[in-house]
Image 1: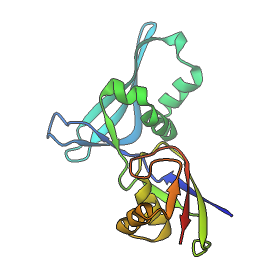
Image 2 (image 1 turned 45 degrees about the vertical axis):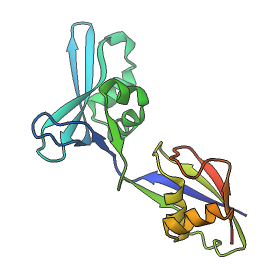
Image 3 (image 1 turned 135 degrees about the vertical axis):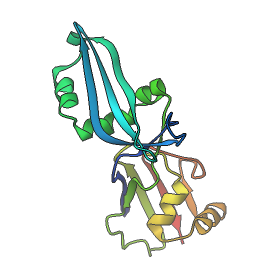
Amino acid sequence: MLNTWVVMPTCLPLVLRRCHACASDRFRANGKFRVNAHHKLIDAWLLVLCASCGDTAKLTVFERAQVRSVRPELLDRLHANDPSLAAELLQDPLLRRRNRVALDWDGAWRLDTGGSDRLDRETVDVSVRFAARIPLRPVRLIAEGCGLSRAEVERLITDGKLVSAVRLTGKVSDGFTFTLKR
């Protein structure tokens, strides 16, 4: 029987970027946007606050775009400071690359195992899904989900008792499956 685990975000991740005021490197996104129009051109930014000093920085969503090229529902969500839009935009690799930022997901996710009480069987098949693209180490997920230490999980991989089609030693942000043999 296949167990399903889901990695779910609990809040917005921290944005890794250098603060010009205090040299901190962590910003909190609070879901606020700034929109500015110049005749037929429009700019939009996601506002982030320094975790140390509270200074505001702007992440460019779009710059000097034709007003007609922006979908009306996107414009409405920007004006309404939609927090789910902030989460969507932070997931966008193009936005992160354009603004030269990375995300810190530590403490911003949880693993929902669905109350898996079938982990005591001889062979356990688990499917891990991600509700958002959160880069995590499979060893960490498996350790947390099975109640094992990371060293124990790594020993199981070495012994061939924990197998998967994906490499379990790197980071993943897409779903994967694994089989644990006791």
